[in-house]
Image (cartoon, rainbow, N blue to C red):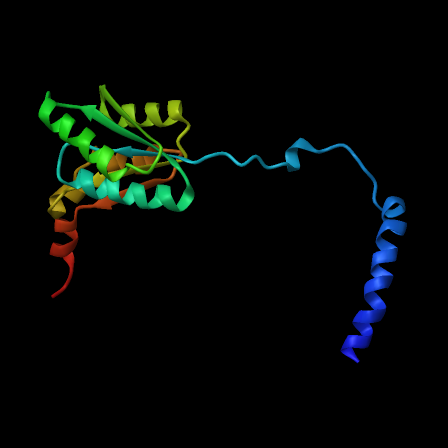
Length: 171
């Protein structure tokens, strides 16, 4: 019975489509509000020269590979540390070797510079690290991660230090 229904409906469908399609379907103007443009995602990774930078870069690399995203690695200089910045640049090249990326070094107030560069680069997300080790660190107002979480219109992902995570797990 199933084979017979296929033998009957397939030729009927092949005849009906070209016959009735021009009469039933109308060609109209394209509504630009209903057209989506596939844009490449840009992720901003805000890093310093501490050990957590590697964890942030690794997380960013994972997300960028999954989403075919471009990465902007931003370091806002607080203290002159040329060897630390060069080490950060080398880590970036190594971890993001197969990903389109850009390394930017700037000076200024850290959260303001992160938001400014994110806007200039057209970032869709900001990722940064948090290395506080105590409850007091969590309560301090004005930390970069808390400021960005409160003020950024972009999604913000905070990567916590592995040391901090292992200290907070119950044994």
